[in-house]
Length: 493
Image (tube, rainbow, N blue to C red; front, side, top):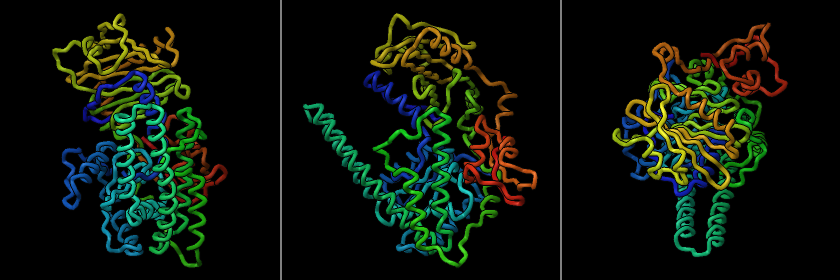
């Protein structure tokens, strides 16, 4: 959760709030892919340098991306590698006249972006998942392909058209069913078009990467790792990985893996292709893994924010997800959920008055009451929707107010007690806790003759599924064995 305060608009309905809350909880950070729209320090967003060659619209988009993905992540050793890789790819591309600039985003999610201007973005989560320079090159060449084929510009036009249809459907069409149908058709057209773009960009990108001297099978390996990572995150969050996402802008990962493999075979030959695994792993050794403490981070059911100085623990069975906008949690595949964000509330406004000020609807006025949470003034209330019921808390902590929204499809007294126990865990961190709050980092180790996947996985500073997580970050299949002398990644405190 970023230190920049959320400016949430009032919700137009509690049911919409419920659906958005649950949807964000279920989807945050799980599906990875590209989109158009030690070392390592976060750059404060207001000081991010302007891009003089960008239009005002793309400047706004650039700042929006920085805001949504935790700002820029400075890494003096990795940045030259990115620039050198881009230079090789540009020289081998169909458009060597185009210019590109890449920004590392301070986000643990696995993602990459392209703007029509040639502004490319990769998250440090993506850099941590890659295992050699050819995998990185496959991502960058894929994003360059979007720019070369004008996919990014076309998507912007399509998005504007979809937004226009949305406004017409909402504001002008008197028949709700007709308006919903028009909006659905526009979204389906946009999504289908994007799938075709992804496959085209995969083909163009593999060709660029191979001609630049990189291993053409890098895309296949990285897409496989990305699929394994998505499945693991889905299992950890109790979400069915088979659940269809028809309007997703990215095709299913197995389809892309097969497509990448077919494209790579066209370029495979007897000549050596660069992978540079040892050199790449040396560069990412020490890379922050997971959340940056400056944005707060998750440790099991506990969330800590050393910079803001608070912590809380989610109810039993919850899986937490930290984003730049809020902390989300989900239990039992979505039967229960929570959201935490922070807003400014005038000091002279009572928190009981704030709860009924209209930021959420259908408050049960009889349940509004002042409370104290570990010495901090607070207020609580309940609210109800068609399918969901809510327990709300507003806690004044320093100069801000922290809003907890607990949601349940069946909010019984025992469930409500678990919500109350969770909010009562909200407290100020001690100085010792703040000093000890360190990020997880990637560490590169050399496999010894006695090492196994299970043995090295036990050294991983992760909450669960140690062996699975070790295999995912190292691109290892379910039956792959370790070879003495090779280098692998582990996650440590």
